[in-house]
Length: 119
Image (tube, rainbow, N blue to C red):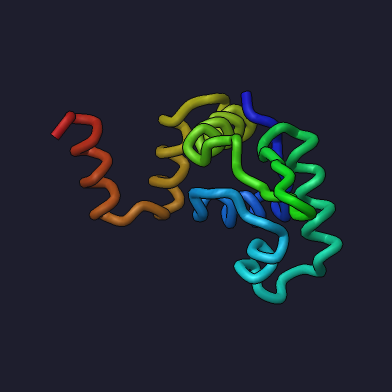
């Protein structure tokens, strides 16, 4: 199971997932805009590397960072964790909750029917 990452770490991971190659701190900073200070991003990158979800490669004086953790794998893991915590691991309980709270549109309900029926 992939390691849990914080919301802030997730923001960094999204940048790395969107970029197929390795990125330096400067590139990551420019993609994030003015969200965080350089030291904060550096600290988050160190934590992500310690968790084993990103790789770090030295190129001259620059560290290049790339995602090791696959975005799809992370999404699946987080979804399973969410279902386990809130809905006893049941997708049916989640869908029932969404339906009962009127969170599903008719189009979404129809889409779910098609998925279930294999259409």
